[in-house]
Length: 354
Figure 1 (cartoon, helix red, strand yellow):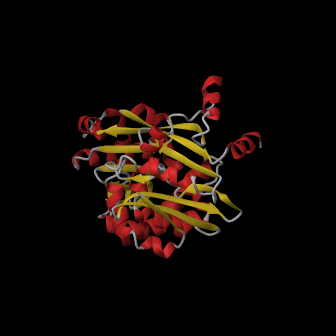
Figure 2 (tube, rainbow, N blue to C red; figure 1 turned 60 degrees about the vertical axis):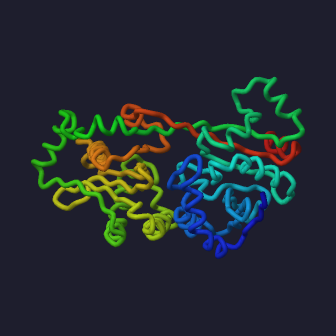
């Protein structure tokens, strides 16, 4: 395989069609790997960062994309684009290209411009994790750690931060396609209906979503202020990111969806998420705390479960977070881990001690 590094963001734009084709044919196809998501992320958070996009080709066909970047103050420490705000990060590798990840790290090992690769939230059943079976973590035995340090033919890889992503599979969705009819939900719906006109909708039109975004962000701020915690939408970068996402993802056939619950046309709960390749992503929900005793967030999620079942979706992914309602609902769990790859043992020692 032939590899090269791209640092010009304009050149990155030229890979859109090939990028998305590869993302759709990767081991774990997900919305966070799409060119549009990465582009929106870079527009919002790319200041003071330098792109280090590694492209791997086999017979002129792109088989590997490793979207790294570094911050201006530390050019040797590389992260994956989407390190935050993406609930899954990954190297984008053709599932039919067995040597892709191994070839990538063999090529990277021969280069000297990086010292550390930090890859967070990598799906555990994936090529990078399979390759780095020699990785060790906090729970590893002393013998496992010693083997990793003494195996000089490979870099030191530290494995940490196991995370759980709860999701509802196709069978769960089908079995719960009338979940809002249940007594536990019906009593809340009846209460709201006595106060006024209660409506559920899913917005897919870009202009309509843009029109609702300020109300959605205000509602998120109101919820988090009631918890004495800062909302992510106090940051202009985060507000811009959601606006960029709405624009960039339009080319993926209504992949941005804003699910809303309104009482007399006033927003009571809302969810900003994605629909792509048969999977709905439960990305950013919020609700009006004034109605918390009547579970507006729970009602909206139940509505989304019904909609997913009616659309015959394969999955409703509740994404990162171990909230009790996710654990209670989930039919399955997907695990992600974080990997830190140190180019040499001196860097690993310095990092561990500091």
